[in-house]
Length: 313
Image (cartoon, rainbow, N blue to C red; front, side, top):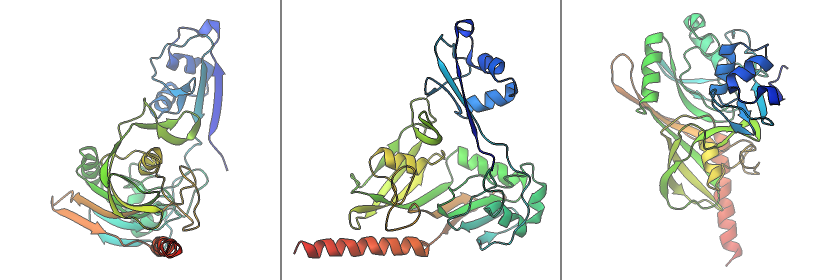
């Protein structure tokens, strides 16, 4: 498996005062200028542990690190997979993604992805302008389950992408988190970018992109809280990062929280999805029940709550 490469360079006297992008062009000749600009924009470049802009003037002694992701895999092939197609017409498909499969091929996951299943259902998407991510307008983490909409043509993709940008697409999640969340409803607003100490993770950073998550408490099972969450932006790992930042990580999240005896993955499910149909303009809305593993985890949390109450009687 080819993994991402993390390279470091120190700024010497001769390079002091140079722009970051120019410094990288000279020190990483294997990378094109456009590639360097993209890496900077994606937050893959850090100066002294913090993401930086291309125009930053470097000082002697600065430490510059660059995370170069592994090259994308070859075009995916169609594969029949156990994915539930909730709705489909000539413009869009709504799928209920099971946990444990990535949305699209990536290093380490060249096959058995949602895209492979979609291509088996819609072979015309193989000739998409984005062959690795045909029709994909938003994503779910590999171990997050639930609803996603996929575009079947360029016009639909442009419409859905525009709805994402104008924040009119309604994406709601159910999450079981550690501890008792208070107040019972609110907004988490904090910018998200690459974690300066671990470039494979995301974190709350001042130089990150705007991120807003609305939440509402549904229940307090055991020592946990069941939340409904509405995304107003769509940053990578947004819900998981925001909830961890307020001290209530998603139950079972090994990256931003810790593993749990209740469930073998993070308790996060995309249960409701609403959007405007790209052709008709009609509002469509879909819901998805909790999958069996999350239902059992919730029931187990409730049983633990009852057991705790009995022990205090």
